[in-house]
Image 1 (spheres, rainbow, N blue to C red):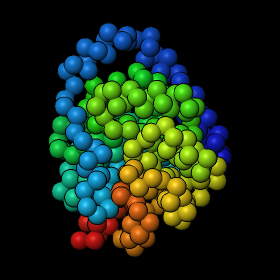
Image 2: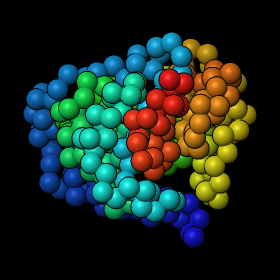
Image 3: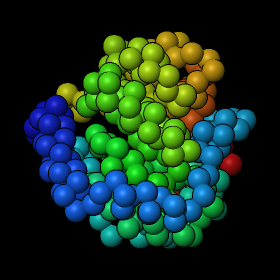
Length: 262
């Protein structure tokens, strides 16, 4: 299997082509009109600040590292099951070529649940932020590994200007320092090594004390059991993002309830 850095490079190159088309086909004026018609923002950050460890439940059909996870997944039914099982927020993969997702998935989910929704994609340009908000997203993922300091700060500012929350994710400890310095309020530590695909829950445990206590710390990848969540809670984790464990389950709602300790 190719190294994740190579896959990341391919994803970013693919995304830059998408962004170029977006700029050709739309203008800032188009987006301002669409943003006026966007539904109200739901408070993603506040949903994660509720007592206990909150779950961001993810809708994901496939990934470059796992291949097909559940190719025939119905985002609407999955979202409804997550909502009924007590998810605090939802995450919807909107990348098509590598994750088999779409903005249409996000819009469909927005129409049937009241939970805040994260657009999970590879965001490199403010047009993508506007696209997310126009589709009904309440939060946007930023990945420190693919953004320099200037772009990170500018995209963070644009997400906040739209009233949304930024979930700013990193893997490397050096990037965690950049994320904190940029002022991110919701910080994700990815437990997946972007070069080897190895997933270690301990990665969050090792870096947690570098996250200021006033930020919302989210642990991502490799969360499979209630015991995992309790270990993370002990070091100050406020939320977990869970996709594969739920999507591979025969009953995602029941699995989510078990993770929540019900």
